[in-house]
Image (tube, rainbow, N blue to C red; front, side, top):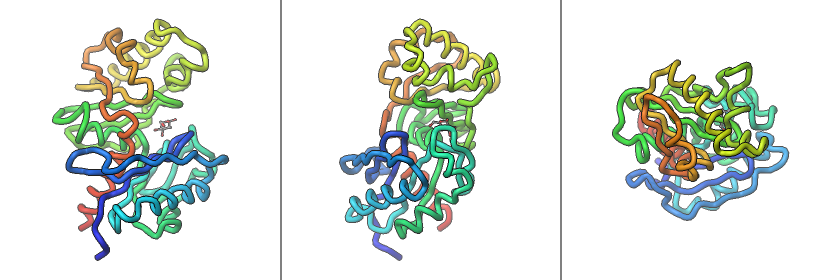
Length: 256
Ligand code: BGC
């Protein structure tokens, strides 16, 4: 057995790769988060190098404990299956194997929105909630986490629902608001269309909305007309890190 420490969560995003040790009892960062710019191009090896730097930075606190890493992609048993907003060279990469090779540590890799959903379930806006919870992240794309009675159904990819002939995230991600310079009124219309469809298809008990724009939730959430309650995420930009560390530890514990 190796030296026990605090698990490390790492969130790989388009502009930065962020990491911090996580206190799983509190659902909070156990140390100051470190952010390193995402290399360009963000190829698997270049990203794994940055992850290795983060692992080194926190080596003292984290010891041999598990590492959880998020990617903005479908991740099936550690292997990347899509690349909507990341470098296409990730597709078919065994990300767990790659990062293990670079860091020498056991790693769990999961979809970024799935990690955020788990964090909100255990420590945030969906804590103690049962039934079907859908978390969506509004950012460059739209990420989703589908959780039923506390169990994550991974890789739901509900940002890619086709609505009015468009990939939903192209119209309703917060990047669309910026790109098209939409007013809040116009953006609320897009979100209404998106969440109504989501509700029609899944009848969730609760919808949680994360991503950077959720800090302005007052501007749009109260204006959406839906059956299910729709609430802002609580863990903000820490959700990916916290959820990744939690998943890594849960899986390590399950393996025994
Ligand atoms: C990707 C998802 C990801 C989401 C948020 C989408 O474009 O397909 O895998 O979760 O963006 O980053």
